[in-house]
Amino acid sequence: MKSVVPSGQQPQPKEINIYSDMVVSSWVKIREGCPITLDLVGDEVHVQFGDNARTGSSEIILDVEAFREVMRLGGNAMREFDETHAHEDDEREESAA
Image (tube, rainbow, N blue to C red; front, side):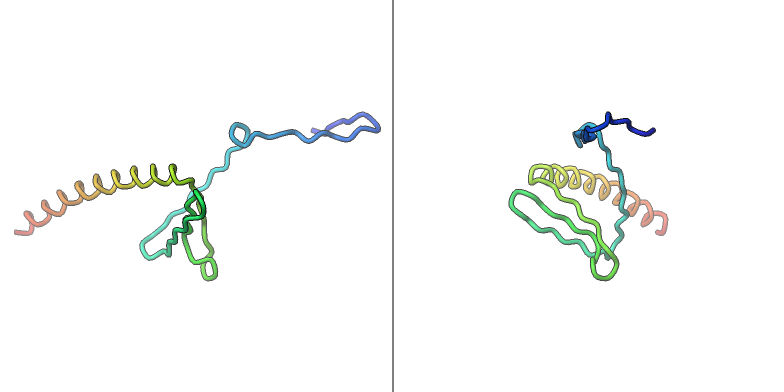
C-alpha cells in the first residue's frame, strides 16, 4: 500500500515501541564443546556463544537480575535432569547385573 502525503509536507515517521510493537524471535542450538564466554559489563552480563573469528557467534545481553533468574532456573533444570538420569543409570546397572 502506497502512503499518500499532501504536497509540501514530509511524511512523519511512525514511532515504534519495541516492547509492544516488535517481536524478534530466534533460536540457537549449542552443543558440548562450543566456546562460551561471560563478561560482566557494568550492570549487564554479556554471554557469547561460539568463536566469532572461526565459526561466527551469537550474543545475549542480560541485566544482572535477569541473569540471576536464568541461573536460578538453570540450576533447577540441571538438578531435575541429574535426578532423572541418575535413576536411568541405576536401572541400567541393575539390568546389566
